[in-house]
Amino acid sequence: MGRLREQLRHAFAVDDPDAFDPPEEQRQVVDMVACRVARHGMTTPVQILLETGQPYNYLLSQTMHFFRPTTSILLRTFAPFLPAGTNYRSATEAYQHLADFFEHRGSIEYLRDRVHHFEDEFRRRERQPGCKSSSQREVHDATATHLHSAPPDEHATRDHSA
Image 1 (tube, helix red, strand yellow):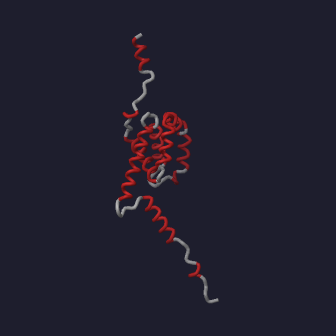
Image 2 (cartoon, rainbow, N blue to C red; image 1 turned 90 degrees about the horizontal axis):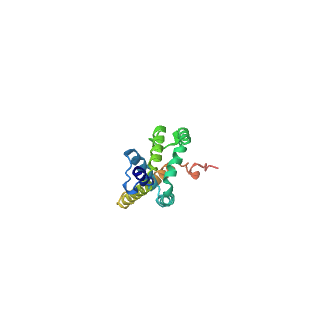
Image 3 (cartoon, rainbow, N blue to C red; image 1 turned 120 degrees about the horizontal axis):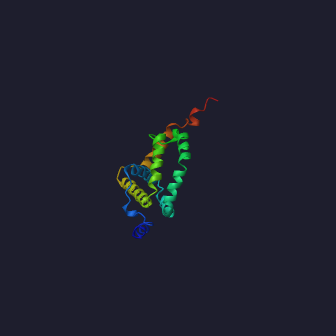
């Protein structure tokens, strides 16, 4: 009777979300995702999505595990289009680490905190004098590339002898 009582006492125990500390591999993947979210200025939509889906994080992880074969095929197919320095194997490993990450109760709070950390970091860098953010640099580089590759002026190439 005492053994059954002991088992039932812990039958519905859940992990403490504040005690969640992901392993280093998961931490690296989460930091990569959080950094990209903050860099692209998507903090608010992601915050809403995370807060809305917080009760379903375990369901999300199981769905990610279910679609892993399909995702693996898609990552292999679109490997040439992945960001520089990313190959098929590292992308599938990152996907697996992210799926494992979402199995824990504190994962949503951890991801939210990391997104805010990177957002604060980018804002701090933008406030420094003479420092351009990565998005400002990308816009400047794209504009400069477009201007240098633009076709010559129509009036300069027109034959004026007629």
